[in-house]
Length: 204
Image (cartoon, rainbow, N blue to C red; front, top):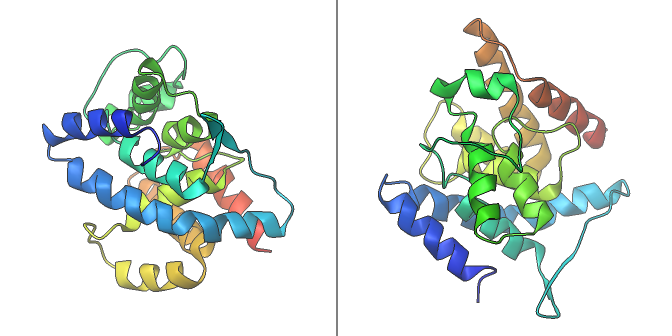
């Protein structure tokens, strides 16, 4: 059975109201496929991973990535407070770009009993990135950008790179996104820039 199946089903029921369920499912499946190879790249430079036990059983990384994918956009069009996952002023200011839904999604999951810190972290930062990303976060961000329902210029080439070097593909996508934000005269979130730098160092 999938990790936290009841919570996942609740998220999908909510997403069906806004036609987001398909995106959540596709992102979840792709994140689950990507996460082991991404974790291997982290392990290559000695970055350790946390483990999660549920009912005495070790939960696999791909199950956790699947859950993060299902939950990441559960509050895509939501609003409210996020007491356990404080949002910064840039996230709150740019409601039109929906940056805040990451914190809202983490709060929604927390309020319904999720205590897997790694999954919550991935949900919380999938919109803005983080200076110390995890394989779960990276897998979620890359899957969110490249799942089969997406379409944008250069996606085929990005997917080809992803199959060989997923972290290089994520770095390229983040760089492209930040360049687009800059071209619009908008402020780039510093977390995104920090994650790009981190990924560059990891690849080196």
